[in-house]
Image 1 (cartoon, rainbow, N blue to C red):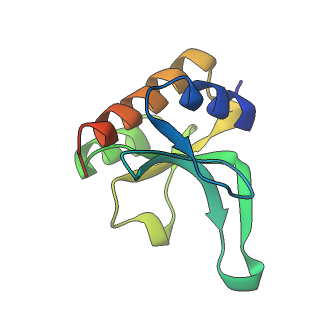
Image 2 (spheres, rainbow, N blue to C red):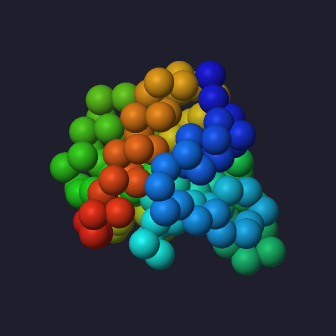
Length: 114
C-alpha cells in the first residue's frame, strides 16, 4: 500500500512538476494542482492529512465512476463536491494504481483540462 512518500516519488518523476511548500504534499504542472494532501476541516480545526490524496479527475462522470466503482479507495467531502476532484485513501491503493492515477491527473492538467 502507498503513503505520502510514494506520492512524492511518482509526482516528481513527471516532467515540469513543481512541488509547492506545504505541511503535506502539493504538486502542480502549468500552475495547476493535480495531487495534494487533503486539508480536512476549516480554520483552526483544519489539519493536513497526508494519508489521503486529493486527485484531479477531469470531469464529473469520471469522479462518479470512481466514487461508485471503488468506494473503498475514493470518497468526497462537501467542500469538494462541485469540483472534478476525489480523495484517495493511500493506505488502500497499490503502487501501480497510484502511479496510474497520478499520471492521469498530471496529464489532464498539463494538457489544459480543467
